[in-house]
Image (cartoon, rainbow, N blue to C red; front, top):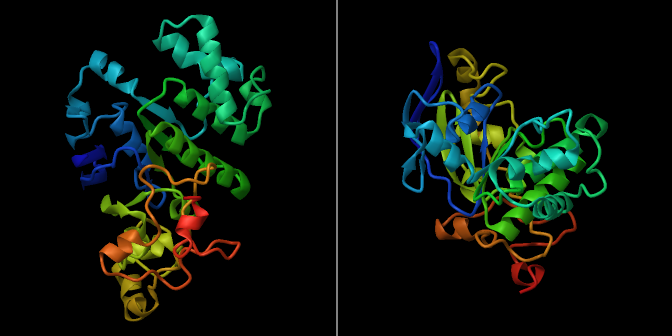
Length: 321
């Protein structure tokens, strides 16, 4: 992304957004409600066009594509929409199979093989004949994810996957994203406001705020940042520039300023989710590597999991190398 700006009428959603999503990695884009996270995803795949700027995918500028070439490019993307976006009158199986029937000329037996394999991947075997209204919200999200995966996309875009899910099912879904990246090598971009997901799943994090991108970079960089907005958001604190409205007024910030820098210490960095295989994903880094390379110390208590295992010290043993 290079110099992106998007507005609706006089309302500027964001402007001058520039960053690169690393191929083959899991990235997450966060921000307070109303900062245009979902709008950003729609600009990436050409459902909306930016007012100015570029979205480069392997040298191709998405906003400049005509409809036919844009249609071809979209086949490289899988998209999980916030509510699953399933067809209510179709069975779960037919929803998942839909892209294969729409975009390929595969025989039906091959469509079934692929569809059932993706449903197995997301844990939906046995639900294929049910209608979307007959399954839970979490199952609908998994069905939407299976549908996003049937064309084996190079890039997977995920809009608020944890919306409406309880913490346990969110944890299962996060594990699934880690496993998909490990198995397929797909580039995954997750839009969310859930800091629980952001702290343990992605390789990279970004924060949208005040109509722009505050920062984007490796997880360890963002979780130890001293930028007031980044520190406040990723540590879920009241003190800082983010208020009930998107921005606090100058008076409120002035009252906080004296004590802000004394309290704005990053919380311990949790261990990153490992694939179910127990082996690191191709681009998953050893804990503390970014910090060490930049001469920084992790906050006390970092990289220790709920079982008391220290992933910084015991990485080789815990990853079964």
